[in-house]
Amino acid sequence: MERTATATTRLGADFGRLWSAVSLSGVGDGVTQIGANLLAVSITRNPIAVSGLMIAQITPFLVFGLPSGALVDRLDRRRLMTIATVVRIAVLGTVSAAVATDYASLPLLYITFFVVGCAGLVFDNASTTAIPGLVALTQLERANGRLQATRSVTEQVLARPLGVALFGITAWTPFLVDTVGLVVVAILAGTLPATVDRRDPSGTRQHLTAAVVVGARWLWRNSLVRTLTLTVGLSNIGLGAIFSLLVLIARERLGVGNTGYAVLLLAAALGGVCGGLAAPRIIAALGPGTTLRVGLLIEMASYVGMALTHNAVVAMAILIPFSIHLSVFTTIGSSLRQTLVPPELLGRVHGAYRLVGATGLFLGAAIGGLLASQFGLTAPFWMGLSCAVAFTLAAWRKLNNHTITAARTAADKSRADRTGQRRQSGVN
Image (cartoon, rainbow, N blue to C red):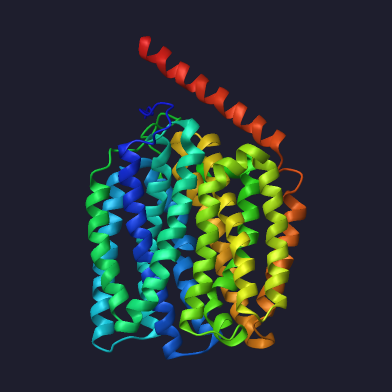
């Protein structure tokens, strides 16, 4: 698959349609998540049961993350996005009807998040790996930064306060709104160009399991991508513990209700928006390696601050820079994978990366719920700090500007060599 985009300041109409589809999907995801969290808290205040919602969302990554990456590498990503969206429409439409008729229960929410999570995983993998085929290499950080900012706006700034408001109307309204929005997403996804690389370096069609192994092996052997992946996995243990219980932390530790919870989410969202939009400039000023290092220090400081405060305003002030760091870190990681990974392996490597990240979230949500039930709602913050210290010490030497520049240079040379070989084969 040859990239048709050229080095330009414009990201192009194809990226615009992808951006629109991801934006609407993000609004629906955020609305549904808030609606489900509030519904769960109305059913129970048990920390383990509430954190089970995040576990249900993460489980698809554990059981389907690697196979979904292989599917994305060998099938039409446009079609996969469309089919995944149709599945989400069917499930969420059914759930909205069930909640409206008073059949709401935690098992229903767990099952819903698992099925929708599997479909959403395919959608996210396909949309992320499609980007290098829609924009020029020089525009990857800009495109990824815009998507990160958009996700923060849609899933949190717009969707989460909207989810609180819609839940206040009726408990089933958030699920219905998500269902309607996904119909538009399916239409937009169907208009995208086919973005699948069907070439196999071996010249043969690999079995799905063998294809998965190839992608996972490539990730493990590339020291920079491996370091970033393991760093995200450890970081997500802390994030999973905190955000799976944030609705309880807001109510019982910070002393705010639904509106205060929405404001906390809004603060985190504003940080994500600022981080996504400012990421290209921050990276250009500091370099990717230095930017990552500064972010790791911010993450450690954020856990300490959140563990020590009972004030919602202080918590908001901490969440903003914390979310800026998370957004910038994600932008750098996405751009590096899209630059360093061979196109025919991108889906599988991205799937393996998401598996490690999801494992961290799963462990964080599970352990965080147990710690909170035994030692109180401060315990998850200290666990997050411990993880942050561990991955900062482990990754500090590898995450520097020189290493990242050298890796990109090697990837550019390899890409040029492959392109030359293809052209020579075509001539011969």
